[in-house]
Image (cartoon, rainbow, N blue to C red):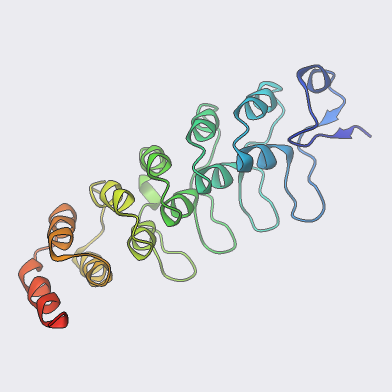
Length: 203
C-alpha cells in the first residue's frame, strides 16, 4: 500500500514516483491532501498535487465540502484560480449545511473570491442553504458591504418577491444611503416605502 500524502509531507520527487496515494483521506474528517492544501492556502502544494494528473479535484470530506469550498471560505483566491484552471472543478457542489463555495465565501466576506466564483457560478447564485440564506443574504447579515455590492450587481437576481425579501433583510443592516444604493443595484422598485419605514423605525 502506498503512502498517504499530507499538506506538509509531500515533495515533487515523492509524488512523481507513483507510489503515493494522492487521494487518500484521513480518518477524522475525511480530508484529502488537496483539501488540506486548499484550506490552508498552500498554492505551491496545490499546484504540485494537480500536476500529478491523479487528483480528484472534487473530492469531498465527511461534511461534503470540496477543495474549492475550503479555498473559497478562507479567501485563497490564487488557489481557487488554480482549481478553476483544471476545467474539472464543480463549483456548485452542496455540502451538508446546504452551502456552496460561493455561499461560504460570501458568508466570510471574501470579496475577491466571491468575484471569481460569480463568474463561474451564476446558476447557483440565489441558492438557499439549510437556513434559507442565499450568498447575498449572508453578506448582508454579516455586513460585508463590498461582497453585497458584487453580488447585488451580478444581474442574476430572481424575481420581485426575492428582491423584496432582500430589501427587508438589508433594512436592518444598512443606512438610508446604503439602502438606497443597494435597492438601485438589485432593481427593486419599493425604495420610497422602505426609506419611510426606516425613518419611522429610527425615530
